[in-house]
Image 1 (cartoon, rainbow, N blue to C red):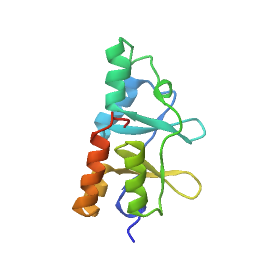
Image 2 (tube, rainbow, N blue to C red; image 1 turned 30 degrees about the vertical axis):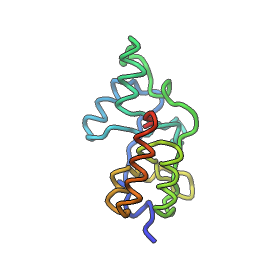
Image 3 (cartoon, rainbow, N blue to C red; image 1 turned 180 degrees about the vertical axis):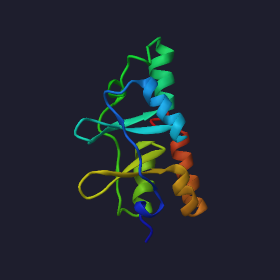
Image 4 (cartoon, helix red, strand yellow; image 1 turned 60 degrees about the horizontal axis):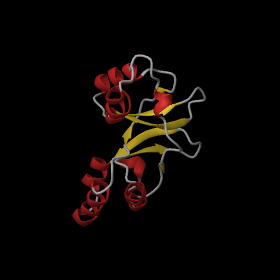
Length: 143
């Protein structure tokens, strides 16, 4: 049984909820990623911020990315996956929640990595990958 921990991208870096969207965009550029977990002062996961969120929810609405914080865009409890969950659980979580990325957490609810649709695609049979892509592509993007 392959687990989320085995195929995730380890060492995911958070953006603090108090950091600006401009700071987040620079961090995404520097890390070459399209999404960052949002963490609060307690280092607990508060949400996921995507490059699309910055564009659609701030810039396109005439917001100021130099004063808008990542925490202002955090919406609800983020969908996560336990590090020791199998890939079928990850597939189900992504499909049911219409998300392209899952923060991976350990037993202590600490962020240990990120699992992406691409990570799953490399390790699942083609029919399951097709189902995941179809489910996510037919829904409006969440992350």
